[in-house]
Image (cartoon, rainbow, N blue to C red; front, side, top):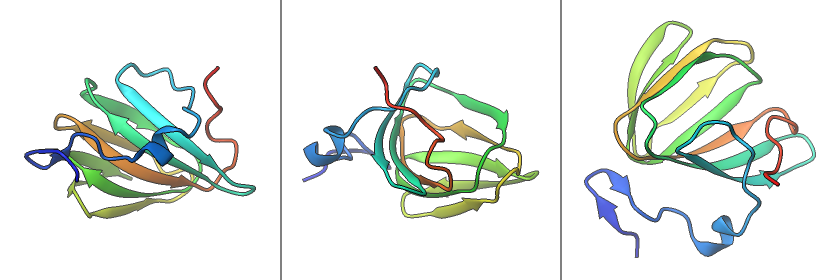
Length: 119
């Protein structure tokens, strides 16, 4: 049974996900567990204590909001995303995000080297 605070799932990922390797990411307040494939990466993110991810670009990215809410700007268009919403960011398109509290997201990256495992 998942625990919730409003629209945010407190413990969104089961042990089988939390036992995956964590990604090496320089942002304090972001934890990500990596499922590595030959041509893609899947990252299970838990984002807390971070207000904003500044504009940046990289490989194509598809995401699903598991819990919480974020304002995502993709190529100059801003929308609010909540639990169950999906998004797609084409390769090279500048995007940024503002988080309303704790947010959980599953992202698929079209680059098997997007993230490395935390040592």
